Length: 110
Length: 120
Image 1 (cartoon, each protein chain N blue to C red):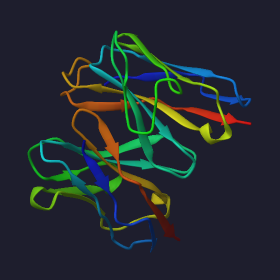
Image 2 (cartoon, one colour; image 1 turned 90 degrees about the horizontal axis):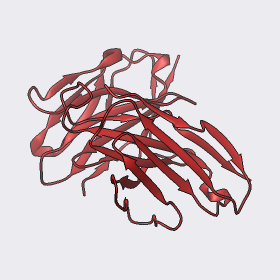
Image 3 (spheres, rainbow over the protein chains, first blue to last red; image 1 turned 90 degrees about the vertical axis):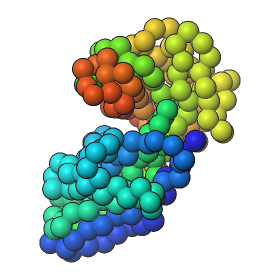
Image 4 (spheres, helix red, strand yellow; image 1 turned 120 degrees about the vertical axis):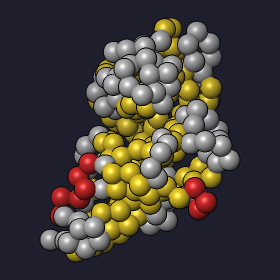
């Protein structure tokens, strides 16, 4: 089965700083890739997804991610974070089922 | 897209008892799953619920502890048996629409709101 690793456990940024969260997966076949966000005390919310086509995917709230097949990576980016982006971010990989990374906690200081 | 509902939304249970969580999808989906999210942790796949046959469990999860049923394409139950405080968690139902039966492009996965379980 596929597996996912997120390199950053906890990221602390100031408002307006740029964000990049790393995600690598291991699987030899075709996969679909996702980023989810979970705000404190709330449910998972889909930020963006990649199935095929343009490897640069734009999602909600100004987030984007780039699929680099040669690196098995799907990093999440945002050029300028806001305090309201404080949340837990999960990378996920799907083939026959969906597997999640351990998550990255983002804290944005006002 | 598919909309998933779960019952109950939360429960507080005594050690040694069992709780059955129900999951209903509003459209036919090809695959259904159960996940667990322990406090401060990521989502961990418990099992794939197979229609009309035994569920497929991930390593570390067994049928005696987490019996699962899926009598049709849109409904599944997860039972947490002989509960202990370590079972306190959020349990999420998920459905994958591989074929686009729910009107989307296919290969989309949807999540229910979760059931927050506290075991005393």
